[in-house]
Length: 291
Ligand code: NAP
Image 1 (cartoon, rainbow, N blue to C red):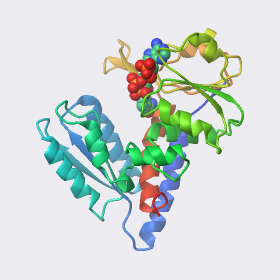
Image 2: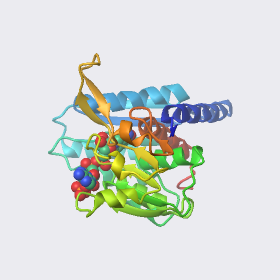
Image 3: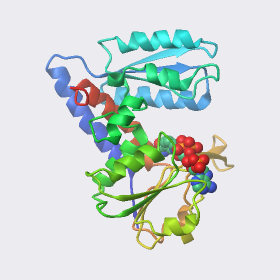
């Protein structure tokens, strides 16, 4: 079994991005610029946004953080989105989700200019991805496909089973995995799937994006399969300072012995998700999606 080291690959990609940023700056142009809009003080969102800002600094991007309190109105947020849409000094921006209940997330997502939608959540980018046009692809699916590529894992003609059909992971990933560049034969499984264990056992590439810690057991994995664990659930732990630790959707101890490759949690998919936002911002700065 080989461990897929997402942290190492993400760090290599960051170095590649930093080289490109240097070239841009040496030409006398401004560095790529990403903005993040953060509403309220949710602990998870604060952490994710702080990582995004830190990542930008590491590769030489400019970043801006725009904060609102929980009681911001939908109209105020839409006005800010409109302002960012029209800011020529900005290559892309994200509105950190979730938003407070009185604001429609879908309305905010649809208000973002698709050309600056580096999260890849706008229906125009999702639609472009589905028909194989250049598009901003949401970070986790983008990162997973990049990880498979960088490990030279054969995907063509392979049976890929994705457990989970969310709009940010399972569903877009199923499209990417079936595209001609990847050529996998894809099954999307979910909570209504019959005989899930058997479906999973048929996978050459098994991707778990469920959010149920250690759901995938050894008996659900074919000998020699590639296993990608997207799950990140915080569970209580008396062994860490913080009092919690991250658990994946795969029971690592049982599955690792059976598979050919496996991603750890943490250190697998997570770092690739982070770096994919940087990749999308660079693609936007270079006008490679919407030419
Ligand atoms: P989500 O929106 O809650 O979707 C979960 C999916 O799993 C749903 O499609 C659901 O089926 C399916 N599911 C739930 N229980 C199941 C069961 N017992 N059997 C079969 N299918 C089941 O979650 P998400 O946003 O995709 O995230 C999934 C996990 O990935 C979470 O742990 C999240 O924290 C993690 N995540 C990690 C990263 C990263 O960078 N590492 C990024 C994003 C998400 P139904 O549709 O039928 O309800």
